[in-house]
Image (tube, rainbow, N blue to C red):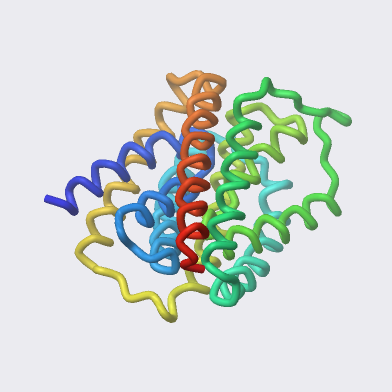
Amino acid sequence: MEFLIFALIIFFLSMLFSMIGLGGAIVYVPVFYWSGFDLLSAIPMGLLLNTVTSASAAVTYLRKKLVELRVAIPFLAVSMIAAPVGAYCAHLVPIHMLLGIFSIIMALVGIGMLKPENGISIGGHAFSFPLIMASGFVVGFLGGLLGIGGGSLIMPLLLYFGYAVKRSAATSGLIVLFTSLAGLIGHLGPWQPDMQLVTYITIAAFLGAQVGSYLMHTRMQPQTLRKMVGVVLCIMALRMAAGLFGILSDGNI
């Protein structure tokens, strides 16, 4: 029964986050952490689900030609190199510091999602190859370090470049697929998963992403989804910050 509850939660999270190209690990990781998993087990589980969610959604987005490949290819190439480096560093950084960074990123991304779109356009879009490469490295490193896949950072960046919400979500989703996979590989060594649980949540993530990507393309208003996710991320950032405060107060660092 517990596995089915996890699967149901993951299905709806995957459906929601696949609509806006975030993958969902920024929420998957806290959910598993709060459920009793240690952070270094929650991170690879989040990255696994991110990989499955993004792969499932990417099939739809590529078929509909929503992916901006000139941005996605150089971005994911650099971020895949940086992600395993971040995953290695995760075992060197204190847990409370990881939680602190995680909560700050969630809050910043959540606030950014609540703001009106403000894309900057230069010749259609603010495309800069050096900026794409630098951003890819930073996103890949943080994704591997924190197990967030990077979608929560890529999506706002693409909106800044001036791309429409749906195109940004589709492009972000493809990048997240590869950054999550690279980060997951970096965490595989010490991870000892419950394979029955992994099977349930993997199937749920795949099916949820199929539904979410279809709804995003045909039915949903992305602006509404951005605001919904922004609210969720801000609430979760406060919840995680409160948990971190409790850890520090108890001296368990």
